[in-house]
Image 1 (cartoon, rainbow, N blue to C red):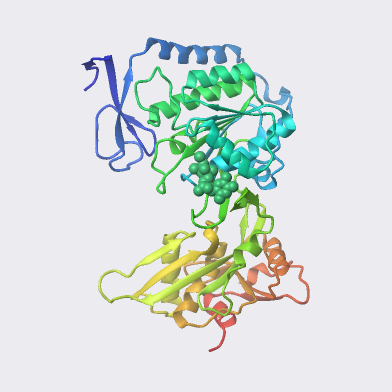
Image 2: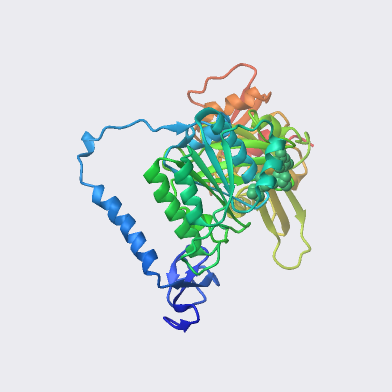
Length: 469
Ligand code: TYD
Ligand code: MG
């Protein structure tokens, strides 16, 4: 296949993995780089002398300016940031968009990426100057319709409907905006490449050129990238290493809440979380997430437990729900989890079986974090265990109690960090007690209305937390 001749001239063929972006000269069923199956897609590229020389020329220009310098002599310049004044966005970014940086915003189609960026763009246009919104998916009229829903529009917000990368770049250089939003990276193309917009080579080439433009001019550029549920679409995943900051907008499409999460940030922490609610007038910040996430919680229902989870520097109270039901008795019982890792749930089920003697083996088990939040930290283990046991025994967990703790394989309850902050949030939301690791009790400052139950094992925790039937 290599180097065959077509009507378009000499074509170089390669196969690119849609998962990791790795390349292979021949098609193989399993990607040699990331071991994903059936992920290689054929890519055509013309032998374009122009393209190759331009890329190497750009490298040459940048390299020519660089000389080794002493680290201790480098003067740290404060990073200039564009603040949106939308607190949830600024916090996730670490204080606003850094000038000259390239940011990627990924998310499923229809989740609200364009809406959020139009709001950010408008806010920055009002405060700092011209913002260019390049729409390669929608016409300027469609953008106008959306902007009208969002409220007043700044006169500094300029829109351009264009898919050709060269034309986009020349417009950017011409109007020299503070911020550029490219919506989306999968629909723009470089005419020098033969592959279709959205292919790995197009997405990478376009993003690389925009990165050079951002670094060279000091303009902040935001790229929008669509991802499917399994994240396999070309784009965001293949670009993560290239950009400075990667943000994901998540949420269930039919729920109101949207979560903005940063998974990579060269200019700030990656643990922060921004929570929004989709309303008629766009995405509205949620300043008291715990209250909203717990607003629909059924009290005195079995299988429901509240846990204070740390999201970056902020504690958030979330409700963990579990449902165990006797399976059909045939085949393997189902284990499903949304919002927490299903393997962690399996491990905790094993702990309950072995250490407590709960016979969950024949039961289907479902675990869910209400409100579409995803939790990765092990501090919610105790909450999951209590929810599972509560559903299995059909005994509710005391409604005013929160659960905090990591669970080990011997059924021991281990301490977690930021215990003060977690408890403060629980008190703030009106909870009156917490079941937590005994080892977490030392040095705790508590008010008298709040009771803490220090436990060493899961068995003790069940004793304390489950209501008597
Ligand atoms: P959109 O920003 O177009 O999503 P994306 O760019 O991620 O594909 O928004 C998608 C949904 O948001 C759309 O179904 C309509 C809804 N929406 C609102 O509910 N309120 C609003 O004010 C706006 C602008 C959109
Ligand atoms: Mg969109």
